[in-house]
Image (tube, rainbow, N blue to C red; front, side):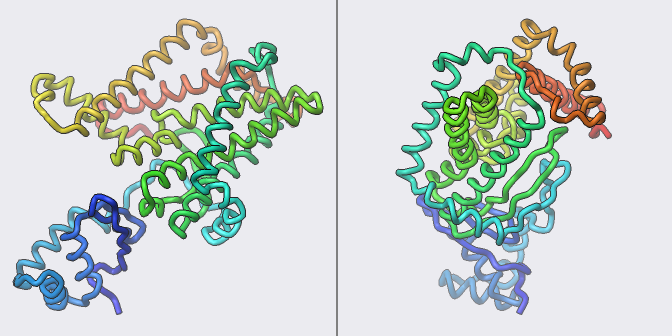
Length: 381
């Protein structure tokens, strides 16, 4: 039997009395009244049945016409038929939902909250020691590492990163999605579908967001001690590279783990877009902007300003102190491509100083694209 929603919603009650509604892979924060309307629609084949059910649930007397108008306006707000476009330019599921769930169950015990927090804090402190206090750190200030070996090892850690997200989501909600591959702007990325974590508590959401980095920090510890024990400088150096990559992922300025973490902590979706709108509103009319008494209004503005300050400060530092590497990077990258095409993969090495340069070029591309859209009113092809 098909209902008026063409789908069956799932409701999870929150501490504030509202509900998380999951319907057709979309998630909404709703109140008791909206839940009652959606429940009636989900159990009826027509609006006569739905309005009768609604009146029965609420002990009210609404006409079918009034109920139909109200429910249609509500469904327009949810816009269920308009699928939101992913921020990924390309995406492909590599590990299906069931397979990902079965594999992730083997590491689910790592996300028992007391164990997780004790281990995560310890691993984070060790990573700080690894970068700033290890007596050998100075010897790796400008080191090169085999790009093939580095990517091979990093691939292993990033797969466990995604399984970490899936394992935490499955532990707290009993549900999970698959693991896939996509293109974000110009960069290849792996991703995991943990949208079911919407049903979890705030602490559980935080653990699920940190789960990927948490798994990689275990590898930081393992590679450091393996390298130190057998005297392999590459493993020790790679552990430091991995710490840097975890740091980049926790920054809340790009759509990575840190961004989703901040979004879940504050309960604000689409942080980048909304904060950018607030900054633009301030620039257009500063006096009117500060008349608002909404705390979320000022949080989004602060995030937008801090985001802009971080980007400008980082870009200034790179241009001021790393301009030689910035100018050299296109030639360096072309040299890597030529080596790759030539088949000398094991000889390909990547200089770690270019990590920050890659981030600089990403920022230039990202903000350049936004500027292009604002000037010409369309997306660049």
